[in-house]
Amino acid sequence: MFFYLIVFILICVALFFVRKFLNKIKTPQCGAFMLVTGGIKKGKTTLAVATAINEYKSRLRKTKRKNFFGRLFKGSKYKDVELPLLYSNIPLSIPYVPITRDLILRKKRFVYNSVWYIGEASLVADSMCIKNTDVNDNISLLIKLFGHEGKGSCCIVDTQCVNDLHYGFRRNLSEYVYVHHLIKWIPFILIAKVQETRYADDGTVVTSQNDDVELHLRSVFMWKSVWKKFDTYCYSCLTDNLPVEKHVVSTRDLKAKSIVSFKDRFNKENVENEKK
Image (cartoon, rainbow, N blue to C red; front, side, top):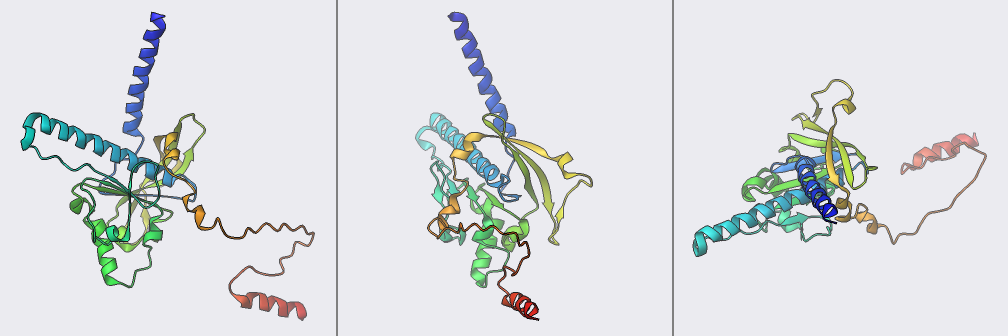
C-alpha cells in the first residue's frame, strides 16, 4: 500500500512539472498588442482566448504575490496594487469585464496591467475608415497608447485577415501569429500549428521563408479545457430565430438556369437569350 502511495505522489509531482512546462511553451509571448489570424474554424479564436486567459492568470498571480510581500515587509505603509482584470467582447465562462464602446473610445479607463481579448476585431472596427474623425482618432490612440495608458496592459485580437482591420490596428502592427491548422486528436491537448508573420507598411504580408510554409510552422500547446471557456459558435444566436431553409430538390437537368446574384440583369440576359 505504501508503495502505491509513493508511486501516486511521484506521478502527481511529474504531472505538476509537465503542466508547468506546457504552460511556458503553449502560448506565444505577447507584448502590448498581439494579433491572431487564420481561416474560418482553423483555431484562431481558441489560440487567442487561451493566450488571453493564461496571460491574465499569470498577471493576477504576480500582482497577488506583490501585494502579499508588500504588506508582509512594509506593513501599513504599503499601498495595494489594484488586481488586473480580463476584458472581452464575447462571453467567457470565467469572470470578465464586457468591452463597451465607452472603453474603446477612451471615455472610461480600464484597470491597469489588465488583459483585453477582442474576437473578430473587424466587426468592431473594419478597414473601411469610420467617417467620424473623433472615433478614428480614439481607436488609433487606444491601440498606440495601450501599453502606456494601461500601464503594461496587453490586447489580444483575432480576425480572419489583417487587411480587414481598422487602420488604427494596422498602423501599430508589426508581427502577428497566423494559425495554419489545429491538431485535435491528442487527448486533453490541442496543438496549434502557427506561423509568425510580419505586416509591412505597404499592406503586404512578409515571411522569411521562400519554400513550403508548412515546413516552418511552430507548435503551440493548449489544454482542451479552453473550449469550456467560450462558445465557439457564440454568434449563432443572431440567426437562431430565422426561418430554416431545407427544401431539397432532385433533378437530372444539370444546367444552371439562373445565377444567384443581386445583379438582376444577369438573369434577364439569360431569359432573353432563351427566348431567342
